[in-house]
Amino acid sequence: MRRSAHAPALVLVLLAALLACKPKHRVTGSIVVNGAEFVAKQCSIAEVKSSFSGGPTVTRSVTLVDDKNRRLSFSDNGGGTLLYAEGGGLPDNVGSGCGTIAFTGSSADLSAMTVAIHVDCRGGGVHTRAKASISGCGQFGL
Image (tube, rainbow, N blue to C red; front, side, top):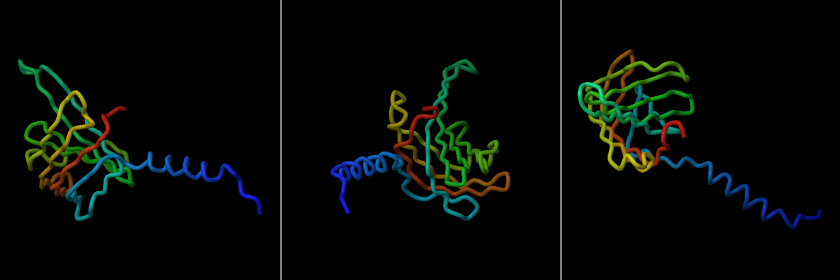
């Protein structure tokens, strides 16, 4: 059986493609939804700037998506807000003011931000406990 001279190069190209697909985000700690570990396959960070109520306001959120297409969004709005959606459906507010959500890093590069989450929220039939640090997320919409 004759081997192709291009086989080693093809293997290297396929290996590089697989490594490029590896998620770049990192979740350290734990996130538990209704007693089960929530393992994020994707994450993104968004930032909204507004000038309601007389002054500029900046609200940031990080959204995590698992392999079942469940979405969990943590926002620093109003002392911390948590949204949850099953299977790509519309998100429900499942907690407000039930912990801390802190974003560190520059708004110039949202993907370089780190998010520290420490929450214990109950709402809408969902119990979420998280003590985690999240980094390396993409910017929402990109």
